[in-house]
Image (cartoon, rainbow, N blue to C red):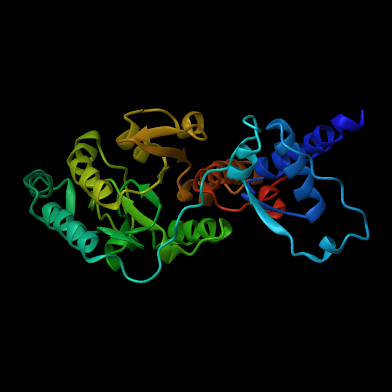
Amino acid sequence: MVADEPSGQMDLLLEHLRQKASAGQTHVWLSPAARDVMRAWHQARRGGPRVPRESSGDARQARPVAAVSAAAVRAAGSADVPVPPAAAVWPEGAPEAGLTEALAAVRAGVLACPVYAALRARGALRDTMVFATGHPASPLVLVGEAPGAEEEKLGEPFVGPAGNLLTKMIVAMGLDRSKVYITNIVKYRPVIEEGDQGSRNRRPTAEEIAAGLPHLRKELAALRPRVLVALGATALEGLAGEALPIGQARGRWRTFDGIPLMPTFHPSYLLHNESLTERRKVWEDLLQVMEKLGLPISAKQRAFFRT
């Protein structure tokens, strides 16, 4: 059985790597002994010489440990090891001039849109346009339905109570809100005709969503994010064309123009339903988003909202 010893040791090592990969970890640190096991097993598969096991007194024990990536595991012949996605690159500094110009053109198109103008003239939408916020080079884009009273007042999506909760969700993912791009399908606040609208809001109609989608498509084509999150049923309806209760639709990947799309509850829903069960559902959706983006996930993060 001595001849099979590297294979048995490699099985243990691969199982360790599988567990780390399932937990979202993209690299692990291996001791010199573990590296020699991997090297001996690989060379044995190629018919080459096997590297003898090093003794506890071997001088090589003083060597620094090395990072072994998922690609190295594949190279060692383990095709069945789940490989986490490459980590997304998060933006630093100002966006490129070309991207800024492309988004400025989309914004100008919204302001000049005759369909939006007709809806405003009919009294269906208000007159203040709210475009987007965050970093345009972000690999993650969050999409809501339409601006509300606070958003209209400050000219930025998700700045009221629901926006504060969304910020906490972003921070819980280990991210900074300034490096995540946030936008809405409809760029104008829908009008409520009965009485004084005040701070009351309503969801956009199908006609209003249809008015916003061409501009959102141009916006996302300029952004080219890696992942989209649809916040609420209206955003899902606009992005995926599915008029489903969000409780049924959440947690399952879709696509929008080739971009992976994860639907989840709107933060405003959680403000009215603060049960840990519902918050846990949203967090499970965001964990999938983190995995798709190659973000590290700690044991503490995986345990959030568990009862």
